[in-house]
Image (cartoon, rainbow, N blue to C red; front, side):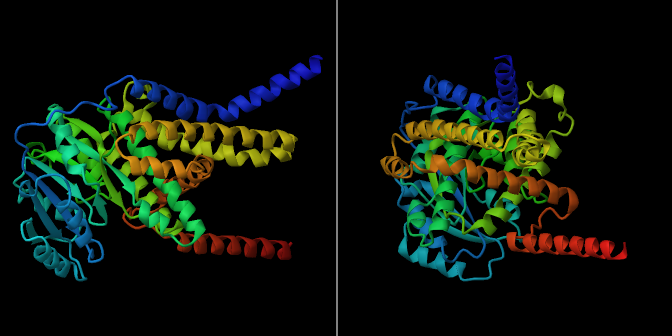
Length: 448
């Protein structure tokens, strides 16, 4: 009996040590935020409509966007916001295609739209900076040209500002295009895109609403973000020396100007889904590098363990980066324990338990975002059909975590942070390293 109890305690202690990170840093915070969200003003905040809506300026940075520019402009024109109160500035970032022809096509198709084209130096940040001073609206909104607006997005975003005068900048909700996901022919690519769609829901509807509740939003997505004009022109403008210019701007407004950055979950912008694993690989490494790059500029003096509970941004970075390494090592390291006498059944049970915990995490997020999509019936209907994503999301998130970890390593070993090898090139490098090591190993045995 004593042997059985000791073995049970040993196994429980073993499982507790392996499952500590998902429980402490994902399950418990998710439960807490779900509770706070349900009993706060985040959901279904009543919005009063002002007697006169303000003028808004939309900046559309263009780089070889001939395939998407017209549809993006069309989605803006077809929103429920008054057309005569929308100024659109299409700023060309050294395009080499027929983007200007598509601009001319839009001028003909929408003669009453306030459209202008300007040329800028190479780089998205430079393009945005060139257009800001040409903007006349009370609010300035940045949109990528590879997406389309939900019809009520602009109206909901402006009403969010008008009803929250303490908000100086805000992020909109960025989701992937459902129709493009459904039209995906290869099932493997479709599964990847469905997981990406839910990841965006998780990050936007859940993560950003949680962060913005205490003015702790880490980054406003460059794909869809909005500002009070007087606040934006008071910054140092977009940083042209970082790959994370949107994160840099978020920190400028909150940390340097002491302003509040919010999130409007009812303003939705649909972007193109990922093309495949190779694009996911380069995209997430670029995001990771931009996050670390900007954080080093603003939080260098605060980055120590003593600020973990005092400074949200410090705790966020430590969880995202410092704990990323043990999370991956502990997961992969379970296989190694077989060689140290641990039962294969025990190791398998640990994997199952860890997987089930992350499924629980996915279910909690699924339930919460479903509540936040009350006003968007099509999204709720689509989400209901894709319920199975809660089973695949843990694996998808693990892949993304590995990519982010590789991004950190590449950033340390490669000073050119704007360059990122694609997935195929990285595999070639890994293959060559393995072959070289095997060759040296064989040569060493021959010499012996």
